[in-house]
Structures are given as structure tokens and as C-alpha cells.
Amino acid sequence: MLRRVVEGPDGGGRVVLVHGFTQTVRSWDGVAGRLVGQGYQVVRVDLPGHGGSAAVRLGFVETAAAVGQAGGPGAYVGYSLGGRLCLRLALDRPDLVTALVLIGASPGLADPSEREGRRQADEALAAELETEGTEAFLERWLDQPLFAGLRPAPGELAARRANSPEGLASALRLLGTGVQEPLWDRLAGLAVPTLFVAGAEDARFVSLAARMAEVVGPPARVAIVPAAGHATHLQRAGAVAGLIDDFLREQGR
Image 1 (cartoon, helix red, strand yellow):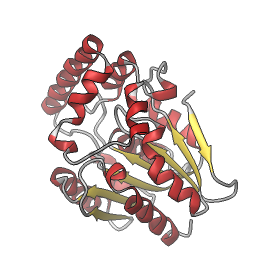
Image 2: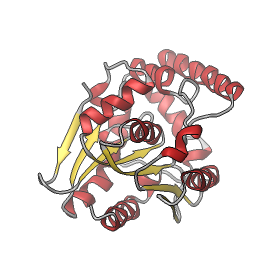
Image 3: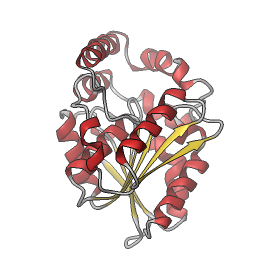
Image 4: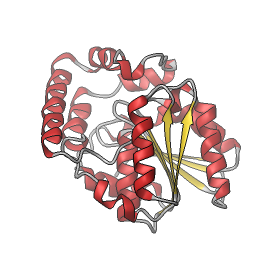
């Protein structure tokens, strides 16, 4: 159902890469190439409303299941929206997820009023997308302080611009943190080895990574990437690929 791209040898450890909002499989170019070079089989997945899955419309729980169906058994690496989905998959299907790496991700919003505020904000963003189109929206989206210092590669940016406004708007409405069931109460039951990654310049998610690791307990670790903000995998692809490789080798994968 979801478009996927598979690279690398059969029989190598499998790593499934899941992108964030407005991104596509191209957003993992820098990480995927390095992991394939280390002998991993890499599966990249386009989320509903994005890239080759632009016409797919699924809710959050259904999308997490579809990511697992596309990726199969392996280690899952998710960024932001992709991280929230990979976390849900790991909690629902620990038989599929052998290890988990979450980059700039959260378990959702525990406070109902905060969730409702986020839902309304995402609805406003979705309406803007449908009115002004992807390119204008993306320019403003990337101009947020959250992405300060980020310079997307031309191919990655072109793939983002090719996303349809209707697809991205549907992703905001169906997959945003405002509609997601928060997972804070389930974190203590996370049974797979987990690495929480954040950029050193992304103070909010550095704090979140520490909080999540504390709730999860001994299976979890935190890694902070210097000279990086929220989109760590785009700013420091080599460092992120190295963290993933080191972490999986420690797990014997």
C-alpha cells in the first residue's frame, strides 16, 4: 500500500527509514547510502500523502501498521512524524521491530487541551496548503526557527516540492499530534532496544529525549548530535548513519 524503496544486500541486517512531514524517501539519501555501504539492507517508506504514497489516506494507527507491512522485520529509524509512527509500531508489533532509533520524535501530547490546540493549528495549516500550494507553504515551513541552519540538498528539496498540497493537508489532518493518541503511558512497556537522537541545538527535543529514555528505562539510550538542529539526519547525515550503525552493532545486528 505504501511506496517503498529497497537497497542493499539480502541477508544483511534490515534498516527501515521513515521520514517526517513534507519529506519523502529522498530525505534519507545521505543516511541510506552510508548504511548500504556498511552492508545493511535499507528500506525507505513514503508515508501517506507524501511522495509515491501521495494518494494514500490512513489514520495514525493504520499508518503505523502499514509502515510495518512495507518494512517487514528489522530495525526502524523514524524522524519526527516518522518517529511517532515507528514508536507506535514498536509498541503494537514488537515482533517486527528488532531495534528502534527515534530522531527528533515525541510520544505525542498528553494534555487534551494541548492536543486540541494542535489539532486546530494543523487544520489551519492544512487549509493554507490547499489555498497557496506546496511550494509557498514549504518556503514558510522551512523558515521556522526549528529548521535554522538547514540547507536541503537540491534533489531532496525538489522531491518535497513535488508533494501535492492535498496529500500534505491530509497528512496534517490524519497524522498530526493533535489527533494522535499519546503514548506516554505505554513507554514503560517498550521492549526493544531504543536510541533517542536529537540535535544539540534543538533544546526541546533534547529534553524530550531525556524524559522518554528515563520513562523507558535500561533498554533506552540518548545520543545528542553536535552542530545540528531538529532535522539532524539532513544536517549531519554521516554522524546519524554512524550512530545507527554503532547502535545496531552493539545489539548484534
